Image 1 (cartoon, rainbow, N blue to C red):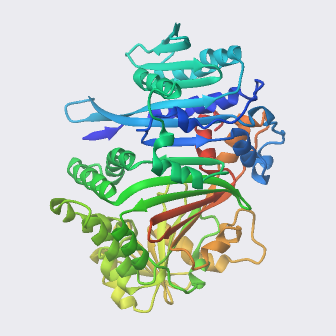
Image 2: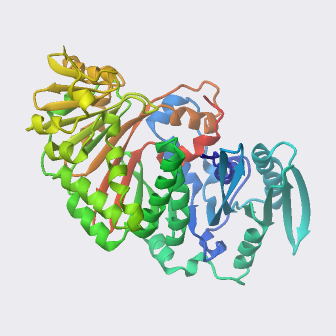
Length: 544
């Protein structure tokens, strides 16, 4: 069996980025704008940039949720205009034996962190040796040694760990080049000198970059980047879906093929909106596949109201699917995925599709979705996702019943909240029926949903997900998929990092994610107080 190691190198990349702009709180910065694409090699496969960290952080901290978490005002004037980017030029995978039957799979990105600090040289030296060095030691161990030297007129900093891992930083004026590969850092320096082509010469990146002008942040994954990341994604999905080596092997071989042959590029932009930060993730698909999905996954022009009454007030997250014909949508996904893998792998795709509905006690997805109306809800009752249920409506329950496993059909019968409840003999699955509404999942969760309608109140208690601003969106039919979820950690962790106040309060916020399909591919739109960037930054907070 192969298990995946936590991606510590990714944390090192982000830690370096966080370090640089945290230090810039304490230094005087100034200077004109530059374009960090001019420092990244043309072959960069993944590029992330924030052209103005002050503006990005101000958007995160100037909202009611952050102010509720910390009473301290945040002065971000020192980081106005700071530019930072991460360029990944490749990935390496290695396997370390743990036992004769188990191994750890390690993924290592070759990355360069690019920063224009607009700081004085002595300030940059302190940034690299003291603060950035601390993050290197936290990843490589306290025994990591630093060597400083001058190379071709630039100040170089080289860290070496006890096990041979190394990190490199080069300083050119107010610019910092930091990475885990010496040749990659040298290549960026050559790019700066005009000796090698930069990412600015890539027309596909330039087109998307220009479209993102004025945004808080920009990200781009090239076609080659998609191919390399798909291997990591495939193994990650395999490890999450199964503990069996055989199943892991099948899943980890299928997902990279599907992604490689379907996705051409990924573009991320973040911008300010009236609802906090709006992140848009555009996944460009093969044109034929995009056209097929845009037709099959078209939402129905109808609104379902009664099923929302079954959502418990304390639900952690709710996802609403609206598909004009659910069975055709499912079939389109399966056929589309099967067409993007080898004939040998294609025979496993239907089983993988069916596995998506197994947690709810559905044995026959085609029969289940064929009897389901357009709206389908899935509800998580806890943050870890261990308690999940599905809510559907149907005009043909007898047909839907045939999609359930025998142990559920033959299970015991009872009544909860005026609804019929059927439970499998081992108690692992239950199905509740209330008129045209059907609730599936584990018994305890199904019972909570069946009782939720009786607890609807005119003046909801604080934290009732059904009365949050985003929940109104989930009732609307315009989008194929909408998720509304709680966030119980970002505000307090950001306050711990930037608030400068020991009196941090745990503050809950809500966020929403929309998923739409068009003739270019998939667009996922996130609305939240802190954005995807905020979710990245809090990985380095020490607050609980």
